[in-house]
Structure formats: structure tokens, C-alpha cells
Length: 109
Image (cartoon, rainbow, N blue to C red):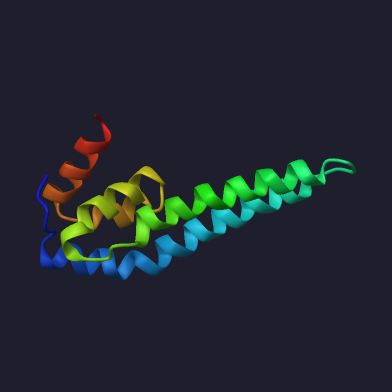
């Protein structure tokens, strides 16, 4: 794996960051809403615990996808985005063939 993304791929990643972040947060909130909506009388503590676990797992995903924002970590970030389906195929196609190959190759392991 090449540790540094090209300048153009870094710019593409940075441009897509707000979209990817919004998509992940939307998914997390929809899942949380489902947990809350699924709570029935006498089951609220279980639902709370499920929600708590969901938020903890989701916080880890957010960190994996958006913390350590640097060009040296960009391929790892992109791999995480791809694994979480945060980009459309058209958006992913905006990256260089080399970057797409590295990302897809890593995920096929």
C-alpha cells in the first residue's frame, strides 16, 4: 500500500469528506431511531443498552473514517469509507486507477 495519496486524490477525498460524513451520520441516526422505535413497555432498559452499544460502535466507525485526517492516512480513510459504503461508484471512480486498485485490493483480502 502506498502511504501517500496523490495531490489530486487528496483533493478528491477532501471534497467528498462532508458527503461521506453526512451519510455515515444519517445511517447511524436511522439505526438509533430504529432501536428507539422498537422499544416496548417494560423493554426500555434493554433498548437503552442497545442504543448505548450502537453509539459506542458508531463512534468507533466515525473515528476510523474521519479521525487522523492527514494525507499520510488518506488511503486507510478511503479504505474505511469504501468498506462502509460511504461513496457512490461515480464518486469512487473520481480517484486515480492506482488508488482504486489499492483500495479494492486491500478490501478483497
